[in-house]
Structure formats: C-alpha cells, structure tokens
Image: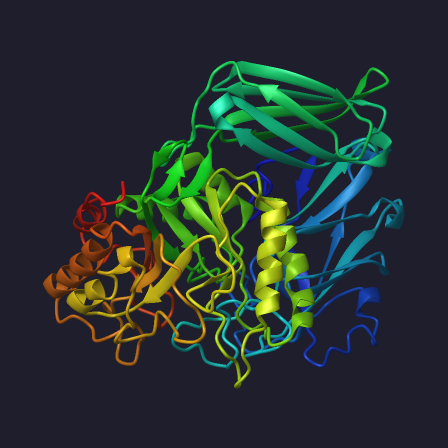
Length: 578
C-alpha cells in the first residue's frame, strides 16, 4: 500500500498522475562527498526508506535521529504508454533543505528551501526504458545561520521547545503528464460582497492564443461560467456567481471549479479546484469576516507527529487535529514555525477553520540586510502556493526575532518582507514578527506567559488608553525595542501550562497540583482576554504535547488530558469585542 496516497495539491487536481511514495533506495552522506563520488550514477544505494517520511522518523524505516548533513534517494520510474507525446512533470512537495535532482544521471534542477514545493519538466531527460531519478538533499540545523529551520533542534538532544530534526523528503513525490498548452498555477480572489470571484491563471507559452474556460459549482449545481482569450502568460477572468454561499467559521462552504484550456477546438488541459467566498478586514474595533466581527479563539499548532515527525501518518490525522481543536472550542490556529502541507489547509478550508500562515524563521540569522536572500524567495513561494486557501486569514512571516549571539535583528529585513507580503497579498493582515521585535505591522501582537491570572489581567487593563505594562514573567514591551502604538491587540501566545510528563519535561511556570488548579488557571487567563475589549483574539500554547514540551491540551499521541467540554465552555465564553 502506498503511504499518503491522496492527491497532494487539492486546489489544482489533474486525473493523470502517479504517486511515487513508498520504498526508495537511500544513503547517508555526512561528508557531502557524494557529488564528487558521482552517487547520481550509482546503480544502488545502501539502504531502503519509505517516502515521504523523513529518515529521522519511525515511519521511514530508518529512525536515525543523529545529524545528517546530506542524504541521497534513488528509485526507478515507469512512464505509462498513454503519456507518450505529453510533457512529464516530476513534483516534490517539500525537501529539507537544498535539493539537487538528477534523472538518468543528469542534473535537472536545484531548489533551496525546506518547506515549499518544486517541480521539473523531465521529458527531455527520459529514455525509452530503465529510467531512474536520484535526489541529493543537503541539510543543516544551525543555531543562527543562513537556513530557516523552525523548531528543529540544533543540538543533538531535543530540549525545551525544540524538537527532532527533519532531513530530506517529507512530503509526497509525484508525477503528472500535461499537454504543452497547460495551466501552471491558479489564483482565486473572492469578492464576497458582490458575489463574484477573480481568477488569474499562469499558463505555458504554448497556451497563448487559446481560450481559458472556467466553470464553477456549489454542491454540484452550476454557479457560473467565464471565458477569456489567452493573450498573455497570465490570463484573468471575472466570474459572477448565481448564488452567494459564504465561507464562515465552522462552515467551510466551498465552490468547486473546472478550468480548461482550449486550443484549435481541442481541450489541452483540464483541472479541478475550489475556492471559498469570504472577505477579511481588520478594523479599529475588531477583525471582521464577511462584515461580521469574529473573535479569534486560536491554538498554537506545531505540526509534529510522534511517528512521522514533520509528516502526518495519514490524511485523516491532519483532519483529526482540526476536529480535536474545534471540540476544545477553538475556531482556528497559528501554524507555528512551519509551513504546513496543502492537505492540512484543504481540511481547514473544508471545515471552516481559521489559520495564520507562518514561516519557520528560527535558525536564520537576520543581523544583516543581505540575509533576506535566504528567506524571502521561499516565503514568496509559500504565499503563491497558499494564497487561494480561504482558511488562511493572515500572514506572519517571522516569530520572536530574538537577538542572536549579541546581534540584533536588521529591521530592514522585517520591513522588506512585510512590504513584499502586502504587495503580493493586500487582502490579508500581516504581522511582521510575532511577539518581538515589531518594525511595521498591521496588528500589534504580544506573547505573555505570566501564570498568575490577576497580574496577567493587570498588564492590559489600560490598553484602551494606549498603555500596557511589562509582564512579570516575560517582557511584552521590550523597552527601547518596540512601542505599543495603541489600538487592537492580539495575544498570540499565552498559557503554556504544564500538565503531565515526567521529571525534567518542559512548560511555562510551575505545574498545577491537580486538574482543578489547571482549569482554574486556564479559566482566569483566558477570561482576562475575552473580557478585554482591546483584544481581537488569543492563541493558547498549545494543542498537544510535542516530545518533552508538555503544555498541550492533548498528549503527543492526541489523547485529551481533560474532558474537552470543560475547555470548550471556557473558550466559548462571550468576548467583549464581538
């Protein structure tokens, strides 16, 4: 049985595809000498691995949690006879970090970035039979260097809020065939108030001169059609919808789409996708979705799994995390220090779950402006990949940009990334860096892990006057580094209350002595935010334990620590701002 067999790109589905997950040959090359030794010409590698699981994971069959600075993959592929005459595209969902692809011993392409997809047209590298693909993945997990690593631990042992590393392939590998006149990318921009959607496609050069046809449906019922002559590589259409069905929290109403390219009377490409009809605006008095004020009851989600590390063991596991969160009374999540896979976003879209998209910036030193070169290209790839997901209601490229080895952040890096994000996507709010140190942001957010509900409440009791005080447990202002300008606040990290685990496991503050004390503290901290009219949302740390960090509301294997209704009732108390 092929692991993770579902189609990996749910907003742009083609029928003719082959899932390449499963057994590959594998070899560790810690000396990074494999290129010099021409591993790409070898007939065999010395181990077997199950793709798409990283070699650190149990599901991969390798389970090596030591540092792996370079790894190699190899497998044979067969091209179906009916694909003859088509262009063959080879896709990788994500490879950490620098990927070098070879087909039949010839280098095809390189991709830098551990979290975003890439593909190559391998048609001209194929032979009649006996085709092989080989991938070299080079990786590092620096404390402060040129590579974003997120929560991957830079020391041998995981500790605190840093976890097991991920190396190499960790998302689905797959092939598809296309006509030379084909769609490369589709972008949906909804106009909820006027019941329409703007659709922009990227197409191949061979498609120019043809026709772009877009049809949309809701629950199988036709909702409209639009056509456009393709006169450029980015044709656009505006499609008015026969009925308005709004995408809302808990109600993931989605329109299905069929997109075709027609040329010389023949259909050369056909894809299926979807979009959600909703509007977002951040006002002085709240966050509005479809013109209705919505209080964000978010939870921190790290995207880690005991047996798969970065990769969920199944599509159902992705869905279950969201359903468990909703059962606890949350309406969304911060996707923390990781760019999550598209299948997670599909379920968020389908279930009506609000999420903040974030990059994995930890590990990247940003003391100099030039460091933006190691961040912005991959971030723009993520924005492009995920722009059309209705569940994403905001972007946060950086998280807690701490001083590293005495070096302060270069503010120009944050400013440039914020401006590039807003230029690409003016429809969503952008937080430059969550927690600290803000440079230019649409929303002032803070992280506060004070465990005393009374003092926690007092920090923000004068926020309506433009004043917040220093946290007793962890700074929220950072005097001289950032200034609260007044206006809406977002408590994007709080709580982190320890529960369970063993001696030495990690969490914030002193662990409660029993369940009753835990719930009393949770209620006090959460109520302080719900009752303050300056807060538009909170994000509790965190949904589930991860390795030695035991401040989850569930265990690492996704068992509730409490009756979820107890947490639900606290989270769903009325908010002052709604």
